Length: 179
Image (cartoon, rainbow, N blue to C red):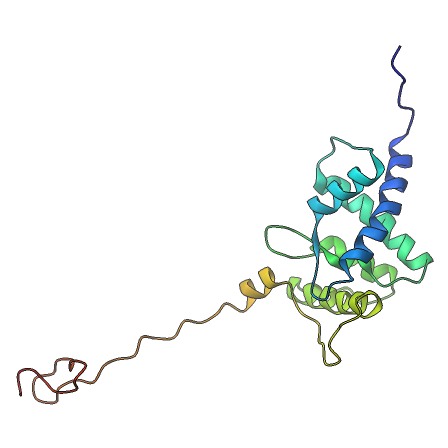
């Protein structure tokens, strides 16, 4: 007769959260690094050998809630700031719980939330990463940065125009009709 798994979901959640902390500490060892919600879930499932069919979105809030508690109890930096969505590189509104737990103000806009998360990520790097630049400042994730500050393309340069004929001059700078 096959052995029955008697592990409760709450027991699994505790195991996943305990496995998540060292994963996030490892992520923080590389300056500018972060991890997606899905990748974090996959890593903790692999480490613990325990999986769930629950959607990652639903599991993540519970998992990160436990990680927030562990970070507060162990006086660790806000490791949950390292977890972002794959689609746009944001921590999302769930990150407010980490700020709330730390007694910090809840941001009024998504951009302010992402800036707060960037500041928390920098603190993580300062604790775990040996080569954080001395002048490092909080940085949005590259995906989110590209969304809020898109690179502006330069307008094409206009070539000189013949003052007599009003046509663009060739590379020689001399109008073919005037020559």
